Image 1 (cartoon, rainbow, N blue to C red):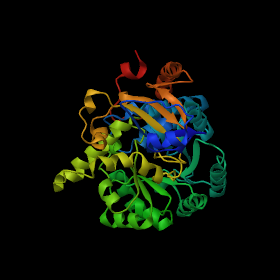
Image 2 (image 1 turned 90 degrees about the vertical axis):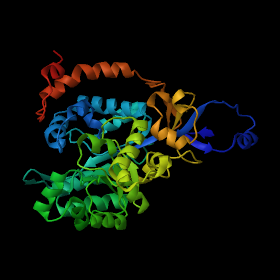
Image 3 (image 1 turned 120 degrees about the horizontal axis):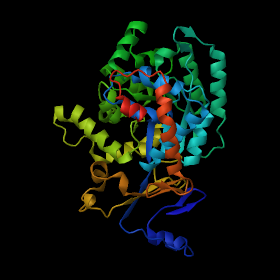
Image 4 (image 1 turned 60 degrees about the vertical axis):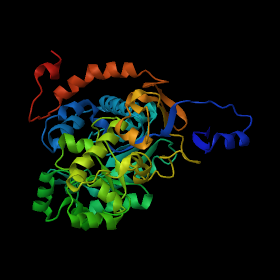
Length: 430
C-alpha cells in the first residue's frame, strides 16, 4: 500500500506497486497482518469513570448510575473521562468510536477535544430530548442547537456530528420526528436505544401503547440513517418493521451479558438485509474480545437451539466490526476497509504467536484466538497513534495518574445508587 495525505493512495500486489512507484523504498513487515481498524458503533465516552460500577447490577443502570455520574461532571472531569475512554478504545484496536451522547451539562466540544488529542475518529452525538421528568422543554431552542451541531464539524478530519435521543420515551413525538429529519437531511445518523430491557418495553406499552421501536416508527423517526442501539427484544413484527425501514442496528453482545435481558438476533438481521455493526456500549474497549463475544453470544442464544454450528462464520463478525460498522455509521466512503481513496485507518497485528500457529482460517482465528496484545501499531488517518499499546506523542501514564487521583472523589460525590453497594474499601481507597 501507498499512503499519502492520510489516505490509501494505492493498494495492490507488491510487484504492481513497485512498478508504479520505482523510487519508493519498500518496508517489509514479515509475519504481520495489516487489517482495518475496529469500529465501535455504540460507545459512551463520558462513562469511563464508572464502568466498573455496573457489575452485578440489574437493568436500567442509566437511572441509578449514569445520569447521576455524568450529570456531576464538570468540564475538566468530562475531558478526563472521555480521553481515558478514547485511549482505552485505541489500545483495543478501535480507530473509530461512535459516542451516543453525554448526559453531562458540559458541551460536546470537551469530548471533541479529548478525541482529537488521542487521535481517534469519532461520531459525536448531541442529545436532543425535550422531556425531562414531568417537564416539557422548549423544543425550538433544542432543535436550533441540534442544527448548529450538525453544521459545526464540516472541516474536521476526525469528528463527524450526530444527534441522539437516548430513549424514545424522553421526547415528544414531534421532537423525535424533527431530530430524525435534521439528521436525514444532513446525511448524518440519528441514534437511540430501543428494546434493550424488559422493563423499558413494558413501560413504553403502558405509557404509549406501543413498544419502543414501534414508538419511533409511529413518530416518523424510524428510517434510513437511524441507528438503534441494542434492539435485543424484538417481536417478529418489529423485525419486519426494522427491515422495511432501512434503519441500522448496533449489536452490543458484551452489554447483553453484563446488564441486558436478551441477545440481539444479529445473524438473522444480517440475513434479512438489516445493516448491523458491533458496539461495546462502553463496557470495555477491546476489539478482539468484542468479536469473540459477538460470535459466542449469537451461538449460545440463537445458534445452539437450532443446531447451527457455523453462526455466520468468522468473516461475518470480522466484517461487522470493521466494514459493516463503517457503513452503519455513514462512514463507508471514509474508513472501514483497506482500499484506494479511504482513510489510512488500520492495525498492524503480530501473527508470529503460538495462538495463531498453525493457522487454517485467519478470519476465524481473529475472532476466536487473537488478542489485544498482538496489536503492534494503531494508525488513524495515516498517523501512528499507538505503538505497542502506548501513544507516540502524548503521556498516557500522566493521564492515568490524574484520573486515578480524581475519579474516586467524583464517583463518591455523585448521587449514585447501586443495588449492590461497593465495599467502602474499594470506593474510598481506604
